Amino acid sequence: MATRPYTVVLIIPTGIGAAIGGYAGDALPVARAMASIADTLITHPNVLNGAQLYWPLANALYVEGYGLDQFAKGAWGLSPAHRNRVGLLLDRAMEPDLQLRHLQVADAARATLGLELTDYLITDAPLDVELRTAVSRASWGTVGNPDSLLRGAEKLIHQAKAEAIAVVARFPDDSNSLALINYRQGQGVDPLAGAEAVISHLVVRGFQVPCAHAPALNLLPLDPDLSPRSAAEELGHTFLPCVLVGLSRAPQFVPQLASESQIGTANLVWRSQVDAVVVPATACGGSAILSFSETNAQIIAVQDNPTQMAVSPESLGIKALLVNSYLEALGVLVAHKAGISSAALKTDLLPIAQFKS
View 1 (cartoon, helix red, strand yellow):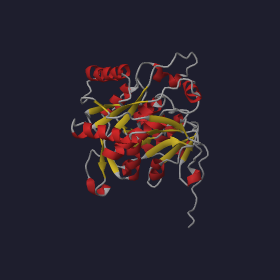
View 2: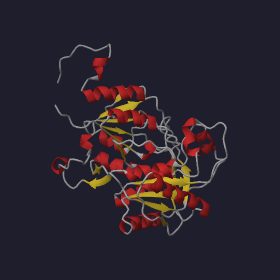
View 3: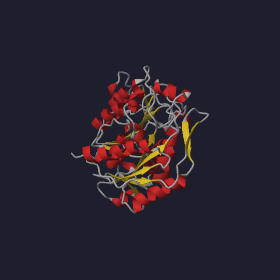
View 4: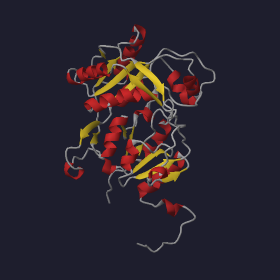
């Protein structure tokens, strides 16, 4: 008997210091394992980006955070893409040498990986990115010239026919900041993540196309105490390779103009098709989780991936299955996909009880 594809959403919010997924692509092993179980894995750049490291997953959909929120609300569907023509937007604030490094990455991606890029565009004004740390110790930031960002993206989409946008913005260099020192040693919060999310959100919200961001920074001095979880960002001059790879096959967004039951297009993915959602147990306050909690999807909350947040599913009245680790979550997904109650795999199965209204 045929069954429909089993679809899993993996969410590890950016900029909140997740012990797994809060660093340089360190949640990729989790994504790879889940992709071996799911027919379709939906996740976001924070999980799949590893600077110059990446791992192609044929059944994974690379969905920017704002787009994932819209998908979870049922406002947008996802249309898997075989290939996207990627537009490269560079911040005018970048120094010539740093700009050249990123252009060489683009050429390498074209020559070595066969990706299709438009001609690149430089913003008409510096983007003026500033970094902040919130009281909650989550990272965030501001873009001083968002209109310049949007004008550049619009030209690449409408004139160069880009189907996805890769943005490289010049970020402040602060190699002596305590936040960066802690991050490189595998502690605390990624100081760049919050501002990166602002940049990609602006483009996706404005144009409904895939977008991801790579910060432009000068090289940091060698650190003998570098954490393995942060090491991917120390390999070269740029974080752009994983972004270009991810965007090259990122799904396109399809606005919800009719009910899901009326659309009937076989290759589109809608929120009603999601079977399970996996999230850190302390990070359940995001828009996507709140939206998925209104559906029949099984929410799995992982306890040993602590974050700087303190928003549990029970505090919000969200029905979730708590598990200790991602290893346990993988076991739950295997059982769930097979249609087996996880209670049947434990030794303390209770007798069936009479329903009381």
